[in-house]
Each structure stands twice: as C-alpha cells, then as structure tokens.
Image 1 (cartoon, rainbow, N blue to C red):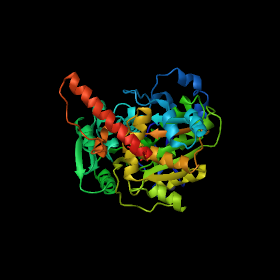
Image 2 (image 1 turned 45 degrees about the horizontal axis):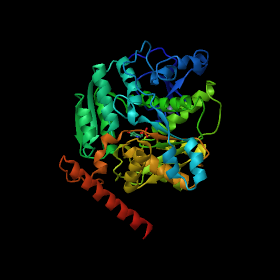
Image 3 (image 1 turned 120 degrees about the vertical axis):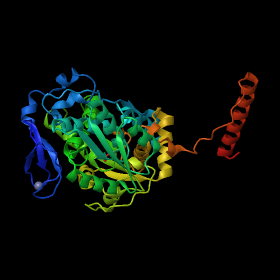
Image 4 (image 1 turned 180 degrees about the vertical axis):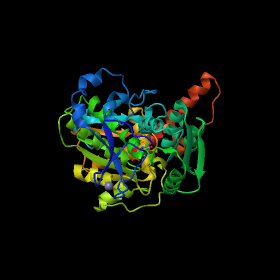
Length: 435
Ligand SMILES: *Cc1c(COP(=O)(O)O)cnc(C)c1O
Ligand SMILES: [Zn+2]
C-alpha cells in the first residue's frame, strides 16, 4: 500500500513514533492510538484569516489543517453550519432576570442538526475518511455505528461510487436504519451492543481489505471533527469561547475541538485564552462523565441503557483523552436521565426553533445543570454543540403529544374547538397558580 508525500503523517500519541500515511490506527510498538501530526511551520505562511475568508462556506476552507490527499477535489459542501444566538434558551437556563440578560448575549448553539448531507456532524468525519479511503485504493468502505455514522458513510460512499458495508446494533432507531439503506449500502444488523459490533469490525478489518472509517482509518476520520472548532472560532469573529458543551460517545469530538483551538492559537489565527471543555452524556451510558465525577483517570466500561442511542458507547475509544481534555481545561462533565433528554429536546425546539435528536437533548440538559451549578456563568461566552437532527429520533417523542380527533372543515366547528381549547388552557393556568 503506497504512502503519499504530504504535510501530515500518523504519529503515536504516546511514544511519538511516526508511521507515515497508511490505513492504521494503533502503534505496533506500544499499542497506543495514532493521530495526525502536521508540519505547522510549513503552513504558517500560507494559512491566514484573509485566505480562509475568500473560500466557499464549507469545511474545506480549512483544508490545510485536514489530512487530505494531494489533488483532492471536494465533491460535497459539508459543514459551515450556523452558529446561533440562543437568548430564549438562555432565559430558561438561568435564575434571575439579570442573569438571563447576560446569558442571552453570550449563549450560542452550533447547529449541526443541519449539517449536509445527512444532518449530523458525522458528515464532517466521513468526508475526510473517504478522501483517504480513495487515496489508499479501497473499493469498499465500512463502519461500526450508533446510527449517524452509518447514514454519513452510506451517503458519501454512494456519491464517491464506493461500496458500503455498515454494521449496527439491531435496536437502532428505524429512521437511522432506513436512512442508511436508502443509499444502497449493505446494512448488517448485529444482535448485540455497539461495543460488540465494534469489536467484530476490528476482526473483519483484519480479514478483508476494506476501509473502516472508525477502525483502520480512524486517525483520518477523527480530524474531520476539528472543523466544528475551526468554525466556532471563525463565527465568533476569530475568537475562542469561554466554554463549550459537547456530547460524548467515543469521546473523539470533544478532544478534536480542543486540538482545533490549539492549532488556531499555534498558527496565530486566534489569541490564546483558556477554554473550558464540558462533556455531556446520558446517565444510562455515562462512562466518561462518571470518571470525571469520581476523579478517575481511566474508563470503567458500562452496559448502555438509554434512549440516546447515538451516544451509547459503553467503552469509549477516546475516553481517556476526553477525560484529560476536560480536566486540564478546568471543565466538568454532566449526564441526564432519559426524561430529562426528552424535556430538553422540547425546550430547545420551543425556545429556539431547533429540533435536535436525543444527543442534543443530552447537551441542553447537561448545560442546564452546569448553569445551575455555577460551573458556567451567564457572562461567559458558551457554545452548545448540537450534533444531530430530531427527525431521525422521533420515536423518542412517541406518546408525548396526543393525536386529537379531526374536526369537520367548517368555521363553526373551528370556533367551538377554539373555545374548548381556550377553556382548557384557562383551567390549566388556574390550577398552576393554585386558585
Ligand atoms: C457520534 C455522535 C456524537 C459523539 O461523537 P464522539 O466523537 O464519538 O464522541 C455526538 N453526537 C451525535 C449526534 C453523534 O452521532
Ligand atoms: Zn507508540
């Protein structure tokens, strides 16, 4: 398998050995994970705010800081999702009028619920991984997935003319399964947890010459997550926030946002300042958050039981580094129950018009706790990472809204319906104030 000349290469995170460019994720010398190292000195002259500003609004505007093969031509405008002010949500996360006013100016949502093409931040990682899959000569790409990765690999593979084999736990949300099959991918449902699916994929990768985006291509894949961090900084006017709140599954995204901020500082694109990293998990699958709370440097694997399936990884591959990122920044990690996830999905939708999936409910619910604990202050610039779209997990809201009997298409019918509805609202209001 050929290695290509590039301004980046694989390097062991622990022993520092270089491994060139090849489909591999573990150092054979010390069995630690590999990551991509760049020649920053070579980049400093050519990579500037002005250069970036002239480029189209998508994640490829940061190409120099991504491990892309020479001559790579992007075929999809992935990323550059909106960074939204969230004043109404801010009012609901704070206690006093003054806090609400302060937070309204400083709370943002990074809205990857509308990331193209498959409505989650996983499009970013897959876009980078598949560029390398092509360069390494794979004709089949694959992944183990909690849902969104499956959607993204299937869609990008269709676009690139690659075959796709997708491995998922059998109990995933129907919309995520259908949203993979529709692209012509082969979906293999496994009767087991994500962690068992992932182990199986490692074994398959040893037997078949396939590009597994989160196994043998994992170091390349993970770099795509940095673009969330680059965009947050650019959209804040080339400024780092005080806090970011990030949902965690394998723990890769939170560490890569950290790497992105460090790279921008190193290249002189933003001023250095402390940023606190806050992790968010579902209580039913909270190995990283539990380690942070108990002060343990290592993960104790869990058996997931939560509606937040996209985050249900009981033995997170980057858990150790996620803990480190959080602790070294002075941040914290929180977790929320399934009912809190549902309430938080509704809160974000009702206050800001953003419909997120269960992972976004985890983020908003955790942020609410962090504000209440005064770990996040209203005057601090805070970004909540909303990573996926609510239309993919509508089953989580099944039973929340009753389906009313239809009324006849007659004005009189509507007027009496309106009166009944107002009466019910009035009774509810009186009950609430205890009249
Ligand atoms: C995969 C995923 C995450 C977490 O990603 P990691 O990098 O594995 O921690 C967060 N949100 C959504 C919606 C995801 O699909
Ligand atoms: Zn090593």
